[in-house]
Length: 403
Image (spheres, one colour):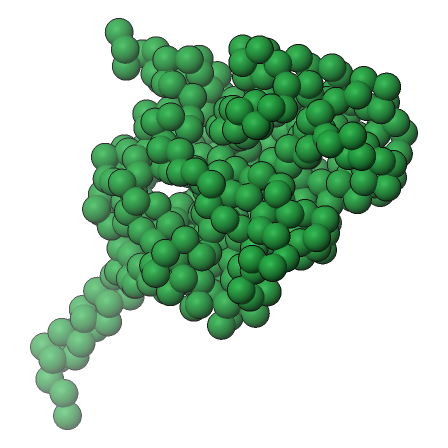
């Protein structure tokens, strides 16, 4: 029989154990929000969820527990994206949201995350305003943005003689920001902007928009849209004969599967500005082989950049020893970004991640050595040249730091 003292000790131990369990913090939780069913699902969607899971697995325990991953489809609607984010933050305990293609949805998520003191890891939200006038301490932007796309692509096409531009843009904040930023580059470089038209997202028939380009006789048809919209616009522009006079396309956001859809014969020579290509070097090929084993094909830049963002975030949480958003965000800016996809990267005070951007050109059919060997690297643009100077973006944090 147990003595009263022994029984008392056991009771104390049990109560202490219960209290300890009750006080334990939940694991870090990361929400992947993107398009999983529509125009932006290709090259991202659930493939990006898989890449984030890889980042969590590679990170191991964070604050004593393995991080958790949740995901949702924002359907390219800001109100839906905002509702998902609010539930994640207020009910589900999500600490950080990653990806968010569609800048309009990105702005809604950014505003809510700022108010709730949560972390935004934007990859697919590309408006340069995110780290410009709308910048905040807990938001980072990991891939390209409209400023970098405009300057890397605009400068390259101008050097190749493309000086008469007509824009076909997506009719929301991303497309309009891309036309704005590229127009400034074209005009500064001595080129001429002949016009711009804007089509609704996920448009099937671009004929009425493309017909407006014909009378202007452009030598550059700039597609300030993305993904399936870009593919459909290219196919229909060729059908209308807009490239018969030698006009070239400037396609800003196009993924490997899209090039496959167009075909190398039609897409050869097309220029792209990408933050990642799976076939760059031994490190990118090794990680891409792991990804392909899970998904069935090599990754495009959205999954790779989402992995990089989450890996760096979890590294910062470990280093800070807390999930507190302000402390983690400060640590993210302090630590270098260094992984298979990003070398010598840096998170600037405005949240802009400085990293190399690659100017890629679609290969000729006879140059491809495999199904996914699609690009030649034309140039590597270092981060400090690829992205907008800190003092030119209008970020309040940058202005305050400069005083």
